Image (cartoon, rainbow, N blue to C red):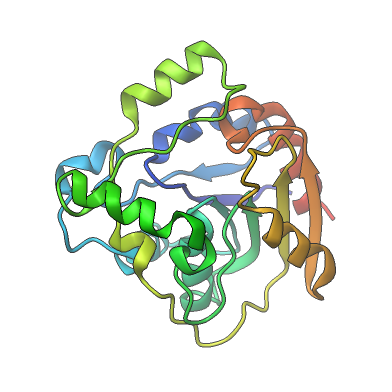
Length: 234
C-alpha cells in the first residue's frame, strides 16, 4: 500500500540529505516529503538567534497543513526525533505511524541537551566561540564514503543552539504505533543506545536494527528503504 513519508531531518542538515531516498520511494509507489527547517539548507538565509525547537516543529506542522497531508508515516532522524515527537503530539489526527531513525526520543519537559548532557558545555562553548547563537556541525561517521563526505561538507551549516536547549512540551505520550531503528555501526559515545534500549523494553514500541552508521539515508539508502517497507507493511 502506498504511504506518505514525511521527514523530520537531523541537525546541521536539511531536506537535501534525503536525496538518495527519493528514487526507491518513488519506485515503491510511496510519497516522500523532505522539507527543510528554518535556517538550514535552502532556508539558511533565514537563520537568526530566535530559531528554536518550536520553530522547527511549526515548520513541519505547516507542511502538513498546507500540503493537506494525512495518514502520515513520520520519520524523525537524530535531532529530528525531537521535532517528530512534537509534531506527532500536535497533529495526532494526521500521523498514522512514527518512526525514529537513530534519533532522540524526548519525554515531556526534556530538551536535546537534557538527553545528551555530556555534549552540553561543549555545544555552548562552540556557540560562544562562533557567532554567539549557532553550533558548527559534528563530524560525520568515519565510514562515510569520500564522495558523500564532500557532498555533506559542502551543504551542512551551523545549527541554532536554542534548538538543542528548548524543552519540549507534550500534552501526553504519543499513542500511534512507534518504531525505533538503531544504527549498529555506532560511534564510541553511543548517543542513541539509551533510546534503543527504551524501545526494546517499553510497551508500545517495535524495535529494529540497521547495519549502518548514523545517517543510513546517506550511506545505506537501499537497506533503509527495505526496512521502512517492512515496518509499514506489517
